[in-house]
Length: 315
Image (cartoon, rainbow, N blue to C red; front, top):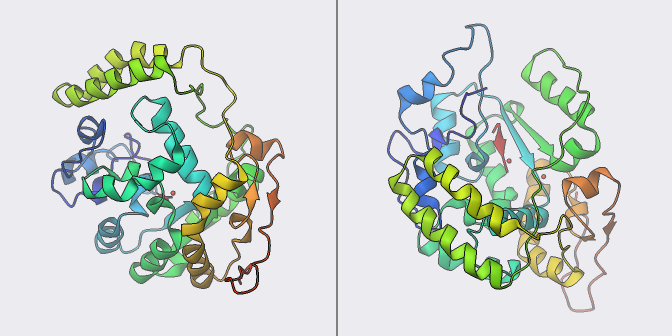
């Protein structure tokens, strides 16, 4: 695998990354590996008979990346990990909120602001809802690469049956299987409630991230660490869970796309269509978070059917 995780090369096309304008975007842009020689250098330690790969979460989302991969490496094998789109959006928002970069304390309001943020040039990481529209993404991926070169893995499979799922991955890649003794927990940090502390510290973090574009990435990360630690002070390890009403609101725009994904793949994603308490790695692994089916529609309303979860492309 590449020495740099998530190099984002195929999002650029040998040009500098776009001048994204969201909080911290300009700073993050410095870490993109967009020059071809630098990208190839990431694999220069690999023996000639080894498979080489990298993992950039946004390749599945980025149409140009899908096209560039197919054109540059037509024999590529792509592993796309698909996560329940509501869980994915909530985790995405939580990540940026706890970094002090997300200015909106309400995930529903943050999602409502997404179209405006996209129009203003915020980077893909802020596209909470759009990143989880897997139906259109997978359909387009199949237009660029043969299906036998694409492996779709569900995030819950990695959580529930990691060894069996990784065996599928190894078989797909044609490499020997490896024994997996332990699965690391997710990248969880302390949750901080909105309040005076957050409203005082988070704007400083966002302002510093804007200034960080003029410093090497490692310098700003080192400077920002005490600020983030202050933000997390008195935080809690227990994260709030989405209510049924919140989940239903976040789910509704995804339903047509989930049905498209089912048609494209011939698989059922019915477990994404109901309320599930939890959704984090830990609650999945502990057995919590059973899905609750959505009620059948009232007369005159559209009725949901069960129908026939990042590359690696990762969603």
